[in-house]
Image (cartoon, chains in turn brown, yellow):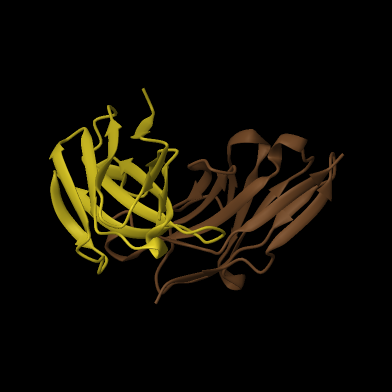
Length: 114
Length: 113
């Protein structure tokens, strides 16, 4: 069965510092992988996705993620964090049958120190 | 227009009430979804509609009744809910040619008293 693990529940970084959020997945075939961001009480905004091809994916707001098949990982990175990046981040894997059934990780809450 | 609009944004209802959540998109997407998100938890899929027909029901209790009256609208009818049904209900849509490209609405925060 598909699953997604985000090992870090809560991360705090200083503004301007670099960021890496970890995501590991379990999936039998080539996965469809996603990172979403959610501000409190809001919906989910897609940051980036990986379907195939180049394993380094660029997204919105200066985020990027790298697909590493050997490590079953899809970690999200940003070189310099802004205070407005404080939010909940969800990694997700596309479910079977390509029905738009996304399996989400439990999320990582990002706090940004001034 | 790349938005999925959900109304109302907040809803408080009693356990004997009947209410409906509404979702609308004008992107021409023919796949629409309901997700439920409990506090501090990830979203969980409830229903999927393809071409206005229900294609996935993730064993959701019958007190939740989805409806897709046309290609732009998706409703979720609520009846006899329990306090544990309190959650953020998210609607999403996607093109059928790129099902994994979900566009989410901002959700309806539901409280059941």
